[in-house]
Length: 455
Image (cartoon, rainbow, N blue to C red; front, top):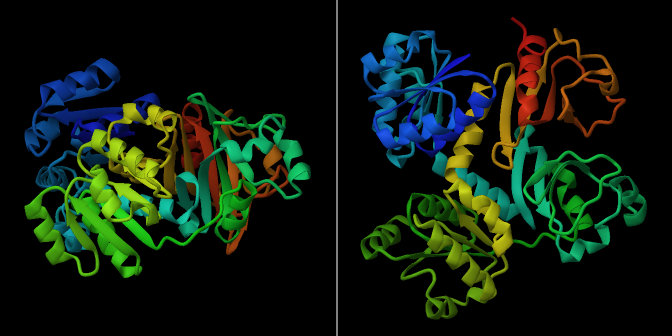
């Protein structure tokens, strides 16, 4: 598979890094020498200096032989023109574009049907707001993925002091001790290491672990880990940029009492005019006097969304210390992620990572419906369709040879969702949810392409 990426920023860099590990033919285009130098020094891919909207540059990159074009620069216009030129040069190439401006929202379908015929438009800000909504809805979750239209949840939570009764006990023995069945735990992250646990493995204090649950069972499952749902009635948003505005607009439709703090007076005037129910405050989200005046202790969730991630981190720590029940922090530097839990920030959202998760499902071979990364680039969860041409259909899972580091974590047959055992059998056209370490992804993708997909 050949993939041309226009834009060597954070999204382009990390997608290229992921694909290079999987031995795909990747060409990345950018007109910033420093960005290309970073790519060349870190990843084994071809780099081309120039504009991704230039037909000459796209031809040099081999657009006519490419299966996919990813236009992921920071400029919407550049991405649109790159797709338009690619559509002229190579109509059969699948095009994905990162489009952030809200002015384009109502034209997405037009861009798909008409030139430039963009197959998929990804808005990182919309994806980030969806992530925030999911984090708000699940108590104690540090990460959430949704599959099968939201009917299956992959939830990451941290084992804290309240769950110390579970620490050090083999997973196979926990159901008898707790008096309740344990959900399928697909992965454990301990000291930055990703572990696929067996029944003999134990959870330890400080671990972040991911489990699979049906949507209707989620709240009961969370109670096993002392996570209890409370309705979100009051939300504070710090930062009135595009993500803050989108989030406030959605919260207004849900009748959530929302306050938004923004430093820029001109932006505050715009927000006050645009929003109907949200209380817009002009000030600093880390001003303790302002936070006290606004009764921060009564806040169910505070979301820090400024363009300065250091400010977001400090504001979240302060707001949590002052009594807010929950904070969600926007982070854009991938290098900061390992530090967050150590300093007391559990719930983070990254628009770029949200965009990467959306992009992955569209560049996987086979009938992949959705995809989500776990711990950066260490693992991935994919939802795919098992067609009748597959030799994994009609066999117990225990008799199928999957790559090491990969497992089936859910089977959706018609309207029935099964958390599988070794005796479970996949039927034709079932949806399956797969967990795979990064080293197992190429083999899983080959299975999805050759065995699950009909050619």
